[in-house]
Amino acid sequence: MEQTLVLLKPCTLQRALVGEIINRFEKKGLRLAGMKMMQLTDSILNEHYAHLSGKPFFQILKDSMMSTPVIACCLEGIDAVRVVRSMTGSTNGRNADPGTIRGDYCMSNQQNIVHASDSLETAAIEIKRFFRPEEIFDYESSNRNYLYALDEH
Ligand code: TYD
Image 1: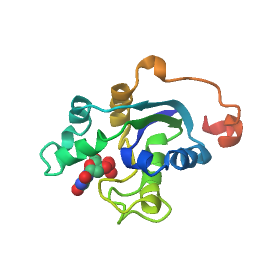
Image 2 (image 1 turned 180 degrees about the vertical axis):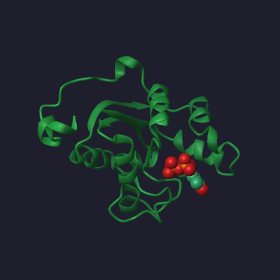
Image 3 (image 1 turned 90 degrees about the vertical axis):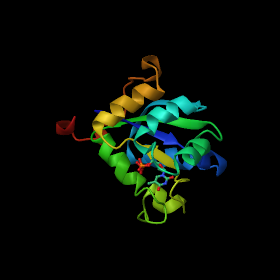
Image 4 (image 1 turned 90 degrees about the horizontal axis):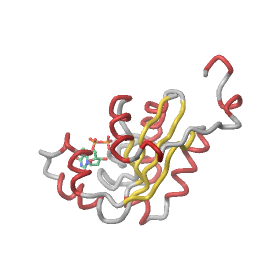
């Protein structure tokens, strides 16, 4: 099973959409392997958004990510990284397809509801960045044989 990292951004807490967004992932059949509220810091964001450090919006992006706590989630499932990215939609909510999270819940390029890992390699790094090993839980899902066929897992 793959694991991927999702951050529910400050805009999601401010707009009281936390339950609704987690509900989408749960309904899809992704298993919550870890979840916690945390206050992000400049140093974790410098790492997390290192690929954007030269962009003009880097500082306001970091400030907005520190404006309230976020909710970090580790979601698990077959092909979880790709499935969660496709549920998330394009970066800019104004361009994101209806039916995706960003397409349905936001109008912004930055206040775009969630972060989701973009590859299996990134997911492994990001899960370690936001969770200690003991905060990731390996428990049996009772509906596993109904979420997947027997030859899928
Ligand atoms: P990026 O990793 O390019 O996109 P994604 O979140 O879809 O993987 O960018 C990270 C975040 O940076 C993005 O979610 C919002 C912010 N951002 C801006 O504020 N302005 C921009 O022009 C871009 C491209 C991103």
